[in-house]
Image: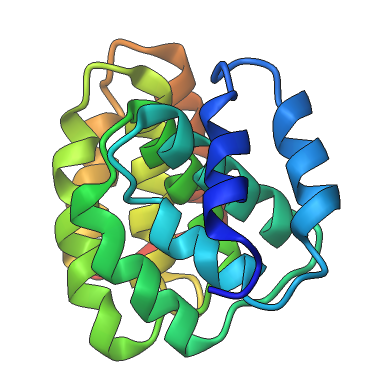
Length: 178
């Protein structure tokens, strides 16, 4: 990669997984370099939790600020999904899916990755995995059978954050395939 992967990774290792200051500073320093955004997909699956979490936070940040990934980039992220370990890195990816146009050939990878997260011990991760699944399978306000079943099941989730996300999704996706 052309943007200085080793130096960038070293900065991500300093991330305490709480304060994004080191991440925003790294983004300012490296964002304009060729390969920066492409490299984030690879770093999402890094063995070091701080690197994986930091890279996925930066992915989410870039997408929230208007960056639109190429299909090739999405394929790189899909290839890294099984290596993403930290719960917060998984959360960042789930929160990012709303900004990503997932190519048809990548949908099964994302779908399979999301399903176990619906039962994760962390409520926010359950809520955002459901959101991502609905966005992945929803077309024109209609949800597929798997997302519909998950939405119905999580209506009774003990966590208020999950139930709130369910209510929001039911408003956004009023029709479903049953």
